Image 1 (cartoon, rainbow, N blue to C red):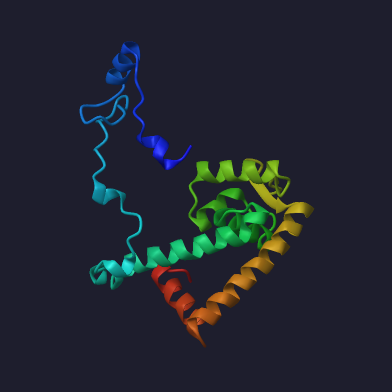
Image 2: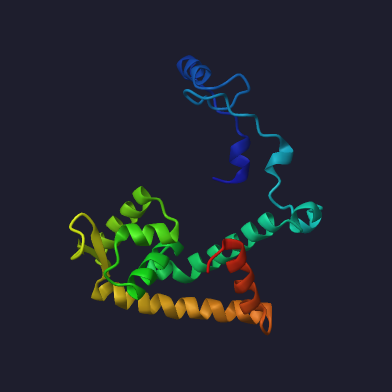
Length: 195
């Protein structure tokens, strides 16, 4: 169907009209059960072609939190594109890397150090185990906890991921110029109090 087909009015039966009235809010937007009606979209809200250079963002671009968040978004978008073939998220990559570098450590320790809530961490570990990348075994020192290990498949996938990560780091080093990447990492470690 072409764009012109959208202009042809569709006739509704009386039953369809009655149903439409029950399922729409006062402003004509679809009604949402248990929530306030959706706000009507104004033409200005639909502008998708606007560029950042069209707006004055100087009040934000000098703020640490804003620029840090935008930088994180850019890094994660790049990460997602690079790691798509491996089907790994940044959090999963971090977990695999930490398990590899610290085999046999408790899952609670890894979750705490990475700042991942326990329930979210358990779900992630379930996913990694289903994929055959990691395994939990009873801790030899504490029967109430689990020790974490990578499987052979997990180690092989992590080796591929490390190469992709290394290429990403090289690209950032090139983008930031001589010493720029190391300076940025050092400053971010101060902000995050990682040391």
